[in-house]
Length: 178
Image (cartoon, rainbow, N blue to C red; front, side, top):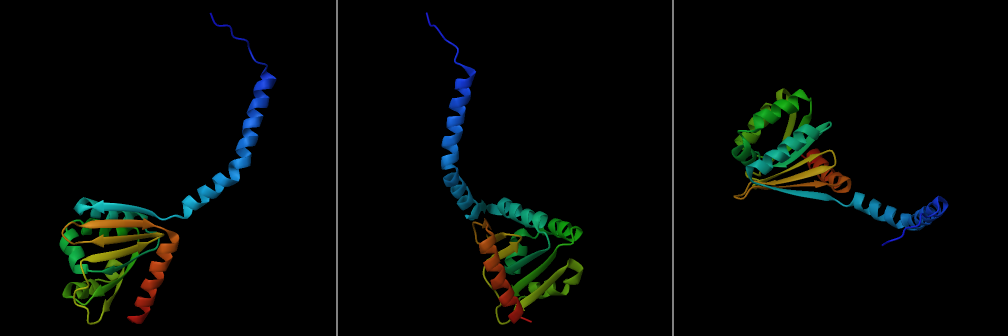
């Protein structure tokens, strides 16, 4: 047999107040940890063509004003050419401009000719025919790094600080390629 005795409601309130006071004492430490977590970059890794499409969809749907990119147009179209028209159509409907820095290839020159029609401005890196098997795309506070090598992997990094750094690098290159 167990016997229970009801505790005074006033006692319950006092115990709750004591717990709140304890939490308030350590709240500054929790707030500091929360603030640090918000400033750390968030990174996501994607693999295969499906992963690449997730990345293309994300920057197409999320870009607010402009998408910046530099890298291999040839590899980009070779590996993802069948999905790109759909995302170009979405980007054009949203009136999102793109600026690209590309290697000097026939496909890159073709992309330049379609510039205004595709809300695109591109500049060519003189003397660089094949600039690798990758592409870097910048939008909002995000950086996408795409590798079109055999395994096809992509990485999205969310960080206002890192994105600002990459955008500055892009602008320096852009301004020197007039």
